[in-house]
Image (cartoon, rainbow, N blue to C red; front, side):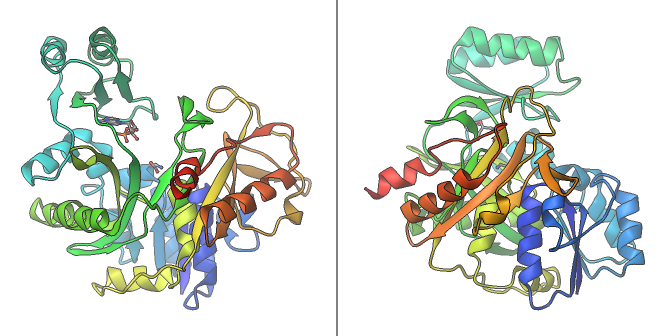
Length: 417
Ligand code: AMP
Ligand code: GLY
């Protein structure tokens, strides 16, 4: 098979890595990919949001299977365009990807089908939102119902802060037109549960946890993710069964009922709260950086699984008896301002997988080309072993302009003690 992966970051590098190991795959393309994938995939110079050019490329090159990484092309309808011309593609339609792109759609679906989630109301009126906030009290969570470049979720610790956030979003319209969802603040460990779905078939991947904050001990600003691990001991098999039966399968069936069958990765961002497991959000795609820790643990051929799943055939997904832990090396300054271009050395001395998130080859040398730059993976029988391997590799990367958290996996390592 000829396989096309769409996207350019660490998640797509991990997909390329898995596809290149598949016995069924003769060639892997990645659009636009990144320079870290050279040798594993042929890079295609088409942006991941140029959906018509991607469709034409797939037709001309007789691509047998396309897997879409990022949300933007999904919400633009890339899957619909590919399917119109008979191309096989793994991802949800434009309609089904609303489960990620519209918080209101996702929350209303959960309410209608009794999927456990935080209590909420949707508002486009500032005064009504304030009345609800007065009734609920703080802390309380305000979510903008639309594209907000990762800044659309505010956890307000006081009623005044909550009302100011509503003023910013509904009156000052800092993100443009859009409603808000105001929801109950929940506490507890979060975990990411990705399932490969086609209609009512739901195939679970092992769970992962990412580290969203920039600083050690989960302090500082939110980021796209500073590290992750997979194999999460404080989420036991009962929790997984509950999440499968009461959340993921219910939602897959609900999507069929609502006339927007879901095919692709259904990502549940879940929280184990004192009141039980609840949904924080759904994504309609592989998580980043969760994919980078989950896929390398697979003991089966993911391309074969996906290819059959699109044809309506369910396969078993098996995992190696090991855990994984990955550290993101980010550019100094990220998630604020940062500069590109610094040379990265030492990568050739590293014997663990490194997924490139934002690098570029300049005169034969890797240079920084983004906020998050490298994902360094450690694997082992224990989290401690995986953590030591990851940080040993990190110490070999030579670049003054990169930083990382020093405590990725601290929750599980402390848990094991
Ligand atoms: P979201 O984009 O909806 O995943 O929200 C981003 C982050 O905000 C989540 O990963 C949580 O850490 C936090 N968050 C969102 N909703 C809630 C909630 N209802 N209670 C507590 N924390 C939340
Ligand atoms: N790691 C969270 C996401 O992919 O959105």
